[in-house]
Length: 465
Image 1 (tube, rainbow, N blue to C red):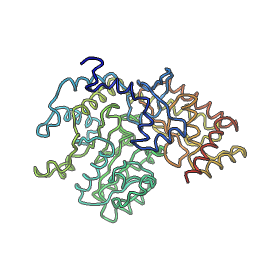
Image 2 (cartoon, rainbow, N blue to C red):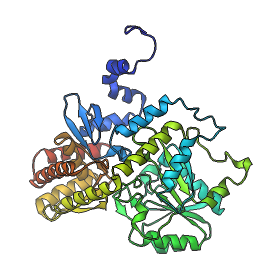
Image 3 (cartoon, rainbow, N blue to C red):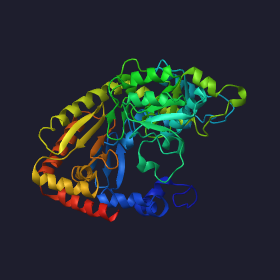
Image 4 (cartoon, rainbow, N blue to C red):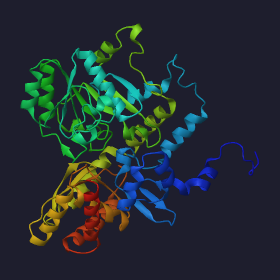
């Protein structure tokens, strides 16, 4: 085909001709509130390329990514090993998704995943974290013959209907009732767990070992004691490791921080994709899978159209190989300890900084009410308009002035969550701490552009009521 031939598909030409329309196209055809929000807070950037833990704009400015696509980019963007694996699997022209054969890649990836949880036996592959959770909920109900799932307040397990039924945030649930009749307990509340189990209808408790919202870890001993209670009542423990799994917290799985915890079902996704191909996985015990797939008649009782596709399996295998070769788990633990230590040393320095917590490279920075009168009055003004505005005031200059992408940890929360690619090191720690210190200095000076932006956020919050 000649260069000027209009026929066929040319991705490079399409992006060159229409890439500048990105925000207008999104406004017209997709979620119109997203570009509106991005423009309001000054996040309407145009990134041209990405590699590792960095983005670059058209002017060649680099941006440090401390968000990792909500944890998807565990190995950073465009890791060469994962890229090669995907080129290789496409070039292999495999007979993929025939539905009436058994390809080798799913079995090989399952084998690799299960090696990190030797008490588990089988894997179901889907396409996302919420689908991994949906699978676990269905399997738990089928295996136990009971209808009710317990979950923890402030949890996030996904946004499809079943996962939403165990989502602990009303903001996500509002307007989508009726949901499944599941029940929330407090994270760490063993008395509530014991009380609910006494009703005799509980299939399982699903829990994030470290909650994404607010970055709150389960209290020491809770997972082990909960497991004992659940098993004593013939119920199951489900560990949602969609965000915390694959090294994020400094162990391969976050539940492994507590000795003796062996969940019956484990949900993973996000980082397993290598940032390229959507994939989710539900790991479980053999007897649970045998209850679900109890006969040949039930061979397709739970399936996914694109589950176990060759591209996703190749990406997952490449990710696990990189994690082993580059010692990613130990690296995340070491870098996370350094970042938390450096940030924790600032708590006594800044009265607006309340706490730094987390595990590995999953870190929460919480802000709180200051003691000085001048700062306290401004803090009160922000809180009256909308809780969470101060954290947003920190996130915005980190990006606009220091070119560092972060996120507020949840709606109506004064917490910033750091979940950077697991490949960052001391240079990125230095860059973030230096920038964060400058932002906090500005916040405590009582003036400047930061508080001017705060007034803008207050006006926006009031207007949206």
